[in-house]
Length: 103
Image 1 (cartoon, rainbow, N blue to C red):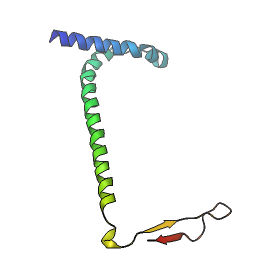
Image 2: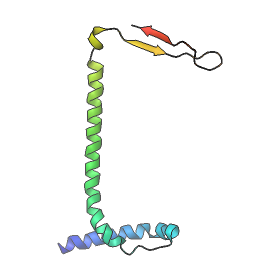
Image 3: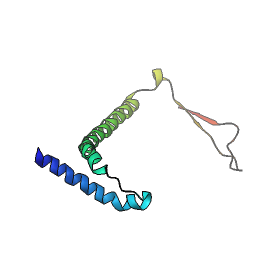
Image 4: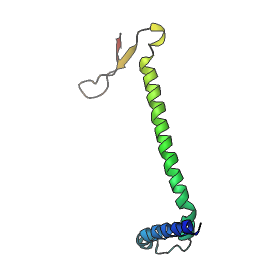
């Protein structure tokens, strides 16, 4: 238990020393509570990293599943699909009538 507390204090102090020049340059203050606050934050940072990676993996899996289902599904009740493209006129503005393509 003492070893873990000492290791946490060392990590906390190292983090405080790393940001000390930036903190002093921008705020002209030294945070005296920073080392103690980091004792609570450092263990949570590891947990937050793992949970973030799990969330990204889950999001990618859900997205891949939705895309796969959309590609595999036939169009609504076998109806042909319709796409609309808007062409530009010679002056660079969209034309008044969009062109409709049916398949």
